[in-house]
Length: 344
Image (cartoon, rainbow, N blue to C red; front, side):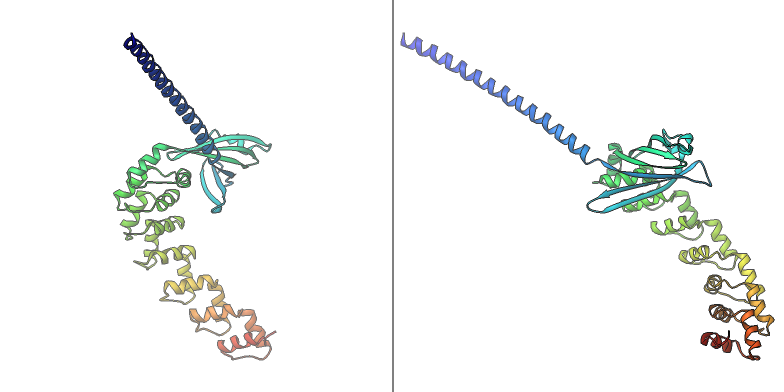
């Protein structure tokens, strides 16, 4: 009888232990689910709080009504104010109509810039071709994965934002690799895409005699409208195989075949590019040189013409000097008179 009671008691003790274990397991599972749900809500709130946002301004081009200059700014404690700007077609901005931007009345707008790296949603208003408002950026996870497979891991949201704004694509990375640019920094990729440094442009520069240019050099060439056609124009002026930086200076100073011919007509021959740039900077014209020659100074070098210009010596100055008794003086004498303020 005692054995029977012990067996019954043992049975119920084991039953209670199993029930307690099951209850404990269920209770733990419930707590785990609650923890996961709360953690997800916290992470979602954190993502919302840390979303990349900022302000935008825009202005429609007066020369090309189908283009718009769009600028983004973003404030951060680490970097202060960051700004990006780019000219783009109105058609690239989904949801933005020509009538919205051109209306003289204030018009509320909401439009998106959808790129491979992510989507930038802009809200605000336009009035008379100018607009302003706020933007929010949502990265595309697929782009991050594509870039990681190409060796660009751990991209920040700021990196992805720049990639979206400059329309950087995975195909662009592959295209650059096909022409020898396979070890670029991510910032170089983004800048190259933003400045329209295409594979065709790189090949064009290579065929024009400029292989192996750094991305920054290609960007400078693009920004200054240096292409194979302009390089050929420089060669036609008599200047072949010039460094890219000098080609850019020629463009910036507007050295043209017409200007070279003008300097030749003024009596200046065998001029170097540096000579031409200096003459252009000092606004030396055939008229200025010929007026000096007309006053009896037939032998004028390019360097002398520049010195005369710097000291404000022209035909009128020479005539005033003659009127004050300074006749048959050299150009160097005229420069000294000008420096001393003798001629009134």
